[in-house]
Length: 254
Image (cartoon, rainbow, N blue to C red; front, side, top):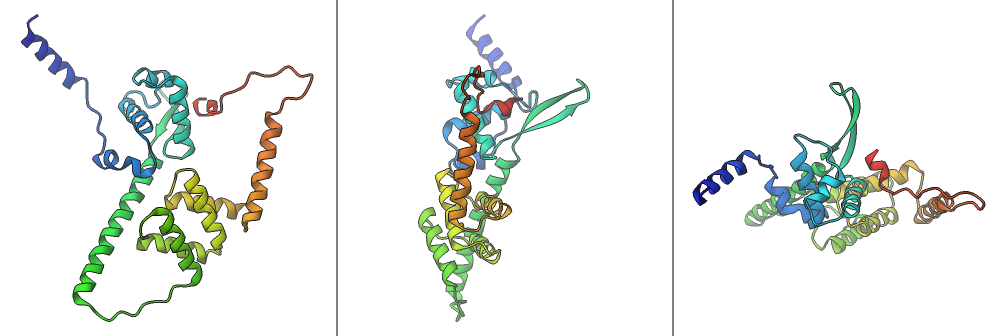
């Protein structure tokens, strides 16, 4: 086979192998929602299989990457834990069995929130520019001390001014009787997890509200209680045959 024939055959095979549509906004902003390069590539590989295999195995994913199966398993577990990826279970009437599939709803929510923040910032800048050109006399609404403290803490942590929507989120939390202490603690925990979006912080606050935790001391006591329960579960009783240790991500692949 001559060179021209080889090239022509390859070109035909290349285009008939299909394409994977990755939104440009996702490619250019994935680091801003806390994804690293490996996590991004795992998501792309899952998307690559979505049409024919909505739940590709860890072996399939690792076979296309330089990462080991355990590394891929850890990445998928981390994505599920952060709710950027979800594993859904549904009934397949053709095969008559329950099957799993990956869902990207959480990831889309993150990107939508990021886009909304950027768009809000752009509109705010345009509005400010127009007001400065007209230069009307403005009556400023006094900011409450709790709100001022929160805005200062969030802007220092995020390294940028807050948008109007983000300030409204802070005001809504204060109106819902979340204290400055709790809101800043939620921010601290979000930062520790590498997640700075307001939707994640809201889920933390709502979980504390559900458990009737109103102070940092109560939250730390709850954490200590949870940790002691976990240690009791993992400790092995004497004179008992030890069970085979299970991987912490096994539950994601049942």
